[in-house]
Image 1 (cartoon, rainbow, N blue to C red):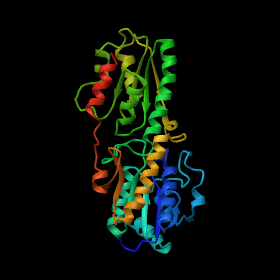
Image 2 (image 1 turned 180 degrees about the vertical axis):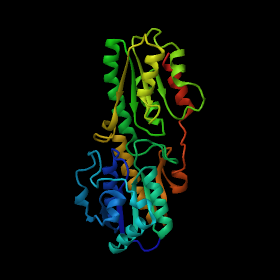
Image 3 (image 1 turned 60 degrees about the horizontal axis):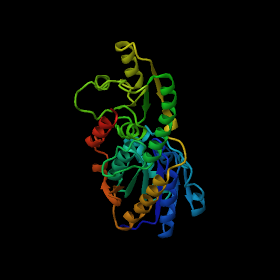
Image 4 (image 1 turned 90 degrees about the horizontal axis):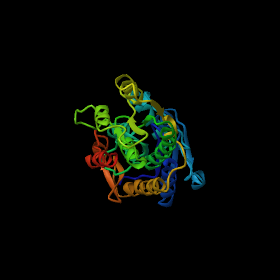
Length: 325
């Protein structure tokens, strides 16, 4: 380990429940090991603009239960340019920050990887994203809380779907990853999940209809991963046109999925990974994401963590298929 005295910490990209728990863990673990901690507000944008404040343990008191991120977050177009990253590095030098801990998702850790390579900075990533789409970790910070939020919402939607004998298409977040849709469908007893990872080439809506929408059921719930082209509205419109005998409704859950107090699982996960980030620096690790695999903290190279297409297990697809009859 080169001489690291001061650690910077930032949150970047979409917020996720548990980010505050991670900020708390990194800050207190760093101070416990003799490091200074400087908090960077508004992600990489704040680093470029020198929005930096030194943190003590008191700065992170009473935040473990709070959703969102006390450091705020942003997506920085300027940081995507070499000129923007040079400005960010100049601020790090001015603030005497020797290493950087970045809490965020795929884009945030990709930025950290490029930044670390260009300026030879030790960077440690924590997987903070509700999408659960980072490779090398079984779960990401915020995913469990969001899954439970979706389940609660679908439970309530089921009440009205049953009362009116309707088919509801419920759109959830996840971008190009179907983990939220697939697992919330299983947890909420939905009849189907339409996810981007289904690579069978089959028409997922036709598969749902072909299995017999009604059978002995008075209502149906279909969970759909968000998509600009094929979201819940797309499939609902298709069903209305192709099967006008069914009464169809759409519920897009939107940003409520990001909010709320983090679950116990996410608080513990964020705490373990935050401590793991400081341990990694103490061990001389650099440019790795701290993940969890088989309940063990692991170090995952950025190049492996941000590669595309973390697969949804086929077993989960089979489970939903079997249980939705």
